[in-house]
Image 1 (spheres, rainbow, N blue to C red):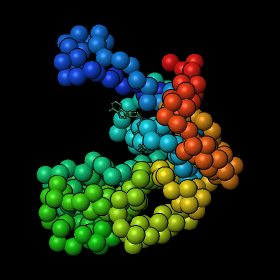
Image 2: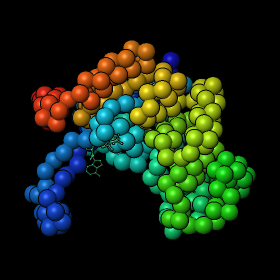
Image 3: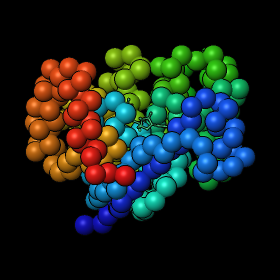
Image 4: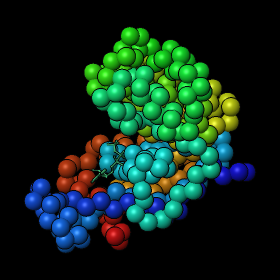
Length: 261
Ligand SMILES: Nc1ncnc2c1ncn2[C@@H]1O[C@H](COP(=O)(O)OP(=O)(O)OP(=O)(O)O)[C@@H](O)[C@H]1O
């Protein structure tokens, strides 16, 4: 089987500052101020061509950070991510430029992906139609609601027909009808044998779409395997986690990251 994504020992370190003054001082004397924070630690997983891999985990577990690294938007601190093909990320804040209109954003994103003007003119009507934005397509994106931005991002990403589609929570902000249309589009992608990364808090959507699940917890891999094996374990974990008091959650977190950097 041909590999589409190979992630090995992926670590992402951020610096957390105690206020603006500390941040400024760190700019002047790098590495002297701020506290290291590991959003991802030694994360590994592989996707074969045609796999749909779901990323699950509680808030702040590192799903978006990993998606952004795979999409090439954020660099990893160490480790490596090999991606075989062109990726396209759809996220609620998916790099749209607020001062540009929807139409200009379509052109910009397509140009950045290497399409020429003629190809863009051909793609544009489909993108606009799928987005259902109507006249708003000629308004600046900063005037859009988060659902409208997500529609535009989704429409661009699916229309350019990437090899690897990364969908990060983009379906959670739109209305139900658009989400359904988008899910159908994703089913078409799956049928075509495209590789997809799907980030969602919806267990139902995970079960419906994914072949494999990467379960992240506090930036580390808790489990990785077939959807039918991982989802029941995650559901059981969520049940227990919801019952925990604040202190029990803190103890659990401390125990989970004990031994990591
Ligand atoms: N630019 C940044 N600077 C500092 N910390 C960051 C930055 N981006 C993300 N983080 C931290 O990294 C951790 C992982 O964030 P991430 O958004 O990847 O989690 P997530 O699993 O996608 O969360 P959610 O389910 O809430 O969307 C969080 O603690 C977050 O605060």
